[in-house]
Length: 428
Image 1 (cartoon, helix red, strand yellow):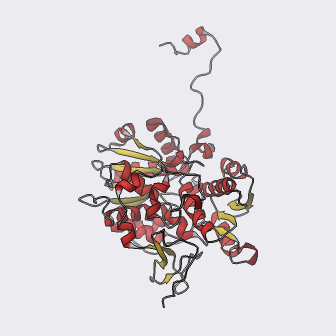
Image 2 (cartoon, one colour):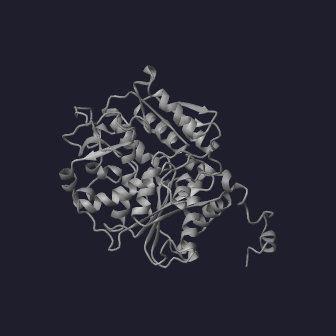
Image 3 (spheres, helix red, strand yellow):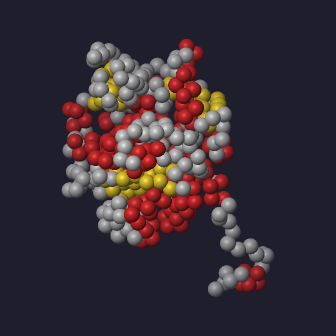
């Protein structure tokens, strides 16, 4: 059964978005605040006018602002700059990593897409800017989310920027750095005695209450718009590489949505003629923590069934035990002939330090997961060391200091004298 499309607050005269469509059964819905299909309960995503996307040119993008809104013609909302709820994230560095490549035995160019350079120091600023811009168009007057930390930072900061109330929900055992960097913006911060999955479940119940009918939960009722913001990472990588797609990408996974949307971005760029696909296509690789690896476990078992887990380990930003986009991440990895792997806490810490030592990028634990899995993929022969590769760092190491604080510190401790410096070997 297909619903009848009706007008909504999204300006379809300016936006290329035309409907929400179920990923599972293809039922179509208006551009409203809805995240699940009424027919089969499958997840919804934004469907676009193909002709509108095909009209976008490289010159149009390159003439745009130095942030994600240069891709506004490919996004569901925000075409009018005055309508945006945004910190103007994006155009983060794509860093050449020859020393990391040499250490891992990679002979082709290796790049680190460093999204810790965003305003609240994670890639979540991208998805929040798009989601809350759509939420404003849909008439919401309060912003909210369920978060493992970075998303709470971003929602609270965006709300503060535009003077809108916010309420963000987090697991009670979150890293102190992420608690402070959410609370400082002055909105309501609710710590839940439970896991992220418990937090997400509660938010799913709250969004159905009368008391929260004016509230946009970025990763619940406006999730289809939120997810589209992740595509800008794929767009940027292609543009920063001179309008081409790398042969291989390694992406951290929590829900699995970031991986699917980067892959979708590459596909869209090819379909509308802005880039050509690599001759052999591109391969998508996923990285999870060993403490929360249900998607990778399913792939290793050759299964389509993802069994929820109770998360453990230091990579808390990836600790989603029941990943909503897991099946679609599996599909993307299998279709592109990629792979997934996972790293334990010691490997994660080593990954954080290796990335810092070889590139000058201090990543949060999710970045340590990605680098540790990159190493494993090379060692196992799954990733081609002679093919150009981009790895994604999604957050700032200052938010997860405890992970490596016990392993690093002063290499020398001396008295304030020249003799002491000489005795310590500092003068050669």
